[in-house]
Amino acid sequence: MRDARFMPGYSALGRLALRVLVATGLVLALAGCKADLYDGLQEREALEIVGILQNAGIEAGRTRAKDGTYALSVERDQTTRAINVLSARGLPRQRFESLGGIFDSKRIVSTPMEERARFMYAMNQELANSITQIAGVVSARVHVMLPEDSPLERDRRSPRASVFIYHRADLDMSRHVATIKYLVTNSVAGLNYEDVAVALFPSAQGTELSRQPLSVGSLAPFGVLALLGLGLALFRRPLLRLIGSQDL
Image 1 (spheres, helix red, strand yellow):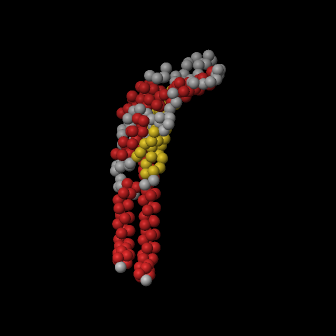
Image 2 (cartoon, one colour):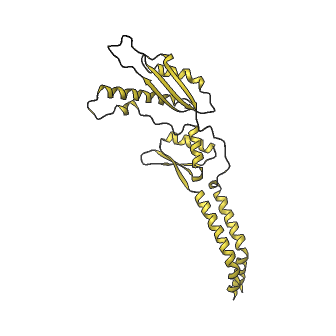
Image 3 (cartoon, one colour):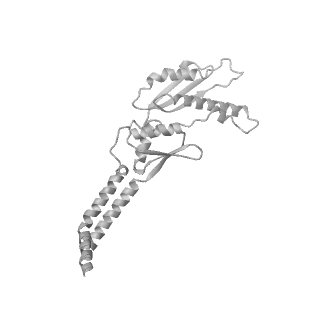
């Protein structure tokens, strides 16, 4: 009889409370999930990325892999913002092939055309890698044109080079153009300063580095407390009835 008095009031309220608790629990569980952001990073770059994300209000974790590289993860609902913040900084940095890696061929014999193509590609990679080390450069591409020697041509053509640079929108990279041209000129034999063209483009990602409101995932501990409080509030009267029925 006592159970009958308790259960009708508890049933309707309990079903509603159960739905609220389950829905809230799912939201908190999903918010707390981590998503992989990048992997294969060197320790120095991983630490740099974690620091930048933390300054932007994004909590990031790093895990060391068996090969010595690091993987980064953030809360799932912060993935898009984390990518935008890092892209604006040019991170992770471009991966360039080194001269040793390009010419490390198992082939015994290569044609002169293949050797020339590989040499030009390696030179472009090395120059682009050097330019990306300049503060504010997000990415860079270098194209050097080396004319072929021909016994039929009386006047030998000069080399030419084009440099495409994507940079942070909040920085003025025009003051570095002369330095970049000298860098390319001194790296290519016979290349004149006036034959180097440098094109600057602001990064499309912008500079979204300001702090944002706390994410749902970062509020998970407070959500758990709120969930417990909600449960106690909803079940307070039925629990009191149950305790009273046990005492009788």
